[in-house]
Image (cartoon, rainbow, N blue to C red; front, side, top):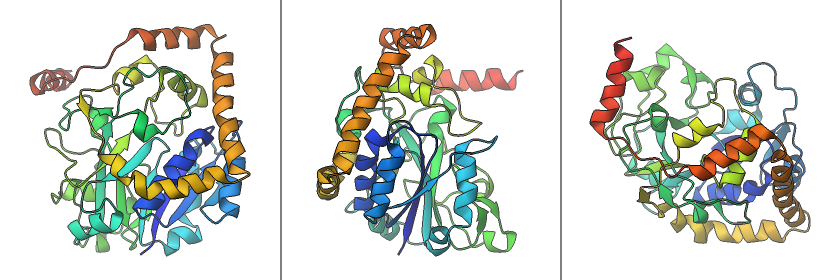
Length: 342
């Protein structure tokens, strides 16, 4: 069974090898990776990975008004890898599929949900945990503090990305879910969440977020390392938005995602499976130097950004702020009521 992961990246070479090795280890067989306007060697690293047979790299340097992610998805829709895939998932470099079922692989997830044609995996936000500097360390080992399993606010914390069967039910790809369903096929579509519950009609057509007040992670979750270290976050803001609708990487973005109340190390059980490929890639005479150069590029770029007053002020605000405190149900419902009274 072919599982295709679609990824868009810009100036993120330092994270690619860990991300690729992890997702290969859990069962993704094909990777379609789009790059645009890279200065840190991301495109060169992807070219080498393609030459070694690990992925398909497509340059997307003129993305158009909607942003690079949407233009990449349009290109992907007609690609041979999309047509041959049994299952598809659109991911970002800071998202790691974390399967808790069975042995932690996609096969185990399918065995747990044999009737599913789509599985929306809800984000679990992993906070900054006080990390400040850019470092040559694994993201999954460095950031192990996360939001609680039930988080009432903000609403963006309930967003999901969808692993879906490529059976013709949906005509177009989307950032969070497949789009443009065929009404004739839709009746046979069955959506199940990361805790194994079958989901209603809204999920099959246009829903983008999971249900509040539930633990959506019993079988699988999407670890979302949206912040990284404080210095990495500055580079995230410098990199720009992947799609036109995305919120800016500012202090508000940081506060809404910097949750560290719970420890969650569950993704690390995949490390023994991903370690051999990661070691092999880092030992490659081309990939190894490119990876090291990408980390140094990040440090040099951060130093340049600190000469800008606005970036320096944002960095200072990040260092001033501690972990965000989860709101309880009543506090969240108060915010919703205020919105309804407008």
